[in-house]
Length: 472
Image (cartoon, rainbow, N blue to C red; front, side, top):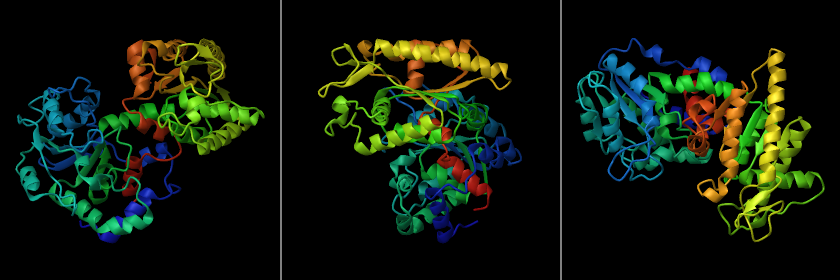
């Protein structure tokens, strides 16, 4: 099967264009095959496994937090038992110089020798011509030489600029890229493999390895871990009655707006920069004002909240209140001197929520637990919570109180019978620091992917797999 340049262009336009034709995540999952659909593939079949390989490697080459690599084990074992030649590929961060060779070595320690054909996990270094999009001859020879059951890891996909070419591409830019992209699709299929499994749960950008490889594949499927996470946990978190949103990144307003638009949320507890924008919005709606302190200063790049974000927050807040959503916002803040204040002076910034806010949040949880009891009694329950982010500069002991105390509230909710889901990233780090895994229903290994999944826009890799199954 050869994919034409025009087919490639149409595929890419669909990926970057409006998602009106893409159904809900739940419907996408119904259409996309699972790993068992590939059971009849014969030994020796080359299978591309898009892995979640974004891990931290210590200076000595070791990997201490390997939860993402462990998520690959079940799928790789499934393929290894069937004698497939499995090519794991993915990225580490955004630095193209970060190699995946340590990932290959670590996977070797996770996968039993008999599963990988009694061969070491191979590593394929430079494998792509970035200018043409074609797989290099030497890499193709290395792959051809792999025996049935072997597992190999390809070098960091983000070593090549083409990998990120669809991140911000416009329709006009696709025209200039289409020849190179078509070359990539066909060369990967012809020289590496024509079966694609997505096991990269946290890979939520429009990387070619997630979104374009399926176009040239004869068969596609979700890996065991991704499939389980999406079907068992993400679909439940998408029904959240309460969302807890916090953090320094003001662009999380986009995620919250998408989540509220879906119409299931009844209560929002917010902190961080996102809460400041909503606090300002609430004041505007009340005909009042609220000073953002240094967050209103454009020179403070990390915490600056531009006027357009205030407009967005005001729109969200107004629509939310009209829809009956309750917003629990901070009523006091810890400033840089460690003192609590109900206002943020012009030359100051917030570093954590204050003691009065901690009490107010606990009261809100009391009310939510009562809502949960009523919901359960009516046969609708249990209530569902999604928690994301941290409340302040929790890395410093002076400003960890808000985050630490709220992790305790998550435990209260879980013990009360509420389903509690925690996003990856800082939220997961805080749970590990101040709590225990069983204090929540489930803690995800991904951050951005979950935020996208809870909104109304499809996750790019699911969009690609759905388009493939529709014969796009």
